[in-house]
Image (cartoon, rainbow, N blue to C red; front, top):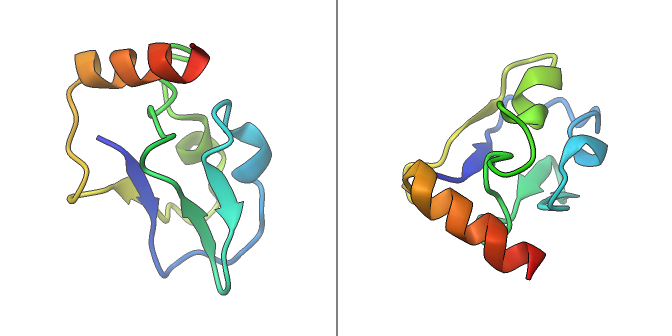
Length: 81
């Protein structure tokens, strides 16, 4: 599943450079994750890098974008294309 950044985001920006797929961008009030680019770092790392660096734990699973590890791997391969 893709991840999302919730309203607890303090807009610190530490997550953006950590994303290997460039799925994180600065939004109007908080940072946002583009679900079509988010692989939860599958194919790159063992864990989602944005989650590991977030100081306020505001990055959570996106209930509207549920994907298996296999689907995330396939998305990673398409993005690397």
